[in-house]
Length: 638
Ligand code: ATP
Ligand code: MG
Image (cartoon, rainbow, N blue to C red; front, side, top):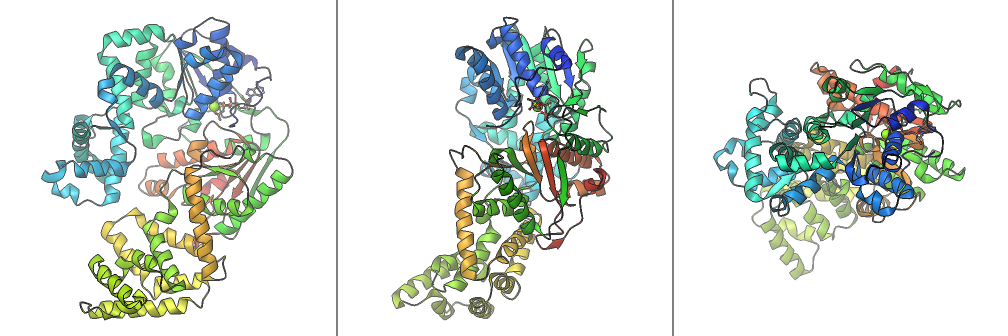
């Protein structure tokens, strides 16, 4: 389905051929996007098996995504007997290492459960009882703690154990906090029988390092190792690979330092650039032709990435003589941007482009939402796997919609229950009112003010809200939302709550802007609520859609688009704060420019996914705020 290397029958370039047939000793293939690195890796695997007679079970092929690993297996399955293709050790680091651990240490790994998200880690730690003697940690703001878990993960990937992590004086806030949490977290996992993704890597490394017998068996068995996307390897993975590949070191690493985009997980392009230092006998092969992208796209990518300082300079020619299309468009806001992208995609599809050849690549998921909604409305099938939590389940969104539903139908008890906290009504009060209302057969809103234990300010506030809700019935949804936020003081409530919990860097305010933007497109509250309900349903489907439509437009994050290719690529929101992301701009303000270089690499990855066209959207306004075009636009030649 994904198009990792389409033209399998085109002859290889002599340089590519050389990379395929150089099978002894360490080999570095360092080359730009679309130069056929992944294709070479597949061809090299086939060559080892067919021409060199290496049994597939001796070859380990590591890719960055399970999708890419499946692709390699499938391709080989076409060329080899099925059992043989299956024996290849192919997968992601986590997949391969976890299987090794399950095989050799089932007693340690079978029974333990996997922690996937940082908030699960924090919950585990809170519930472990280990924080009893650390009241100061319990009182921490949630976002700070989550940041600290990010730091812990990075340390683990750099193989810094609790005792060795960065010294406390030198660290920033998140690191200082991480320093305290780290040993407690490790202990909580051990005692309660959990592990995280990083533990798989560390566990495997330590097993091989400490158990000479197991290591010897693998070293004898695995005679050839190949690693794609090597620019994103981190320390613990690299150390493990070094152990496995020894002593023959038939180790082939493939990558492009310009595409290193997982710095937050401890990946470091220095490993690919330093490979020949670690293996002085290594041969290096560079590939200089981009077979994927038409020439204007290649040019765009290279003028952009040329602004990075920390890189290895490469030459790159386009194999294709056609220019291809690259264009900017400047819609008024994110909604118009979405419509224009979706119109363009429908047009392409009408002209015969398969939907799966169009991709919308985003930096953060807010950029995807309006586009997904427009795609649904247009009835265009698409693939979307969401990494984040559900938009319609977020608290600020649920409260807002609760108010609107109540405006539309004052008898909607569920809606009223949803917004209780914002009216300062407790669960006990609610229960009392509820039974009263049922007994008297009256709308709850009528019974509420009669409660004796009410304080004056509660009564007043409820009266205001009731009046506003009545007024809302008459007005268009965007205006109704304004009334609820401003006069109904929901905005104040959200602000106060966010301040108390310091959650989500004022994320709620983006959420309100997104709702407002959607509301502006509808004439009545009823119509808007209907739209919202449909979208919430859709969202559930996007999240749980199995099986995915066979052929659909791809909506995915740039991080996940790595290694893939599409005819037409759409990049929404090339504005400051979105790409480059606000975090990176923050870092720049603090004097760290490396974060900006990583953002530039992200955009480079995004552009170089395209074969024929790249469209870049620069909305003048985004979620109600004026924007400035991304600084990268000028760097690409405006
Ligand atoms: P990325 O850095 O994005 O991972 P890559 O270097 O791995 O890119 P591939 O995905 O292997 O590049 O190849 C890019 C495209 O070029 C594929 O469609 C592939 O089939 C095609 N291709 C590779 N080599 C040749 C060739 N010699 N002749 C024609 N097409 C080729
Ligand atoms: Mg590749």
